[in-house]
Image 1: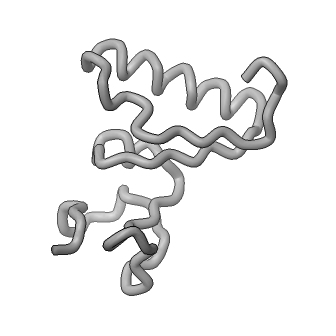
Image 2: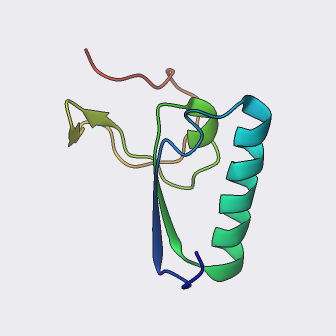
Length: 84
């Protein structure tokens, strides 16, 4: 983030952190994104993290699932899960 990137990719950014530290890291990432405007792409299995994102894409066997359109998670519906 030192060089003011146009995009930041975060793969499971809180995966190995305790819950409190994870929340602090996410707060920092989302605050920096809002302040600087970089694109933030997050890969995660966490529904809680996904609920903070503006757009959500689901994957099935390593590919985007075309049956599920990109949409906010705020809409009521089934729980997110990977396809079997």
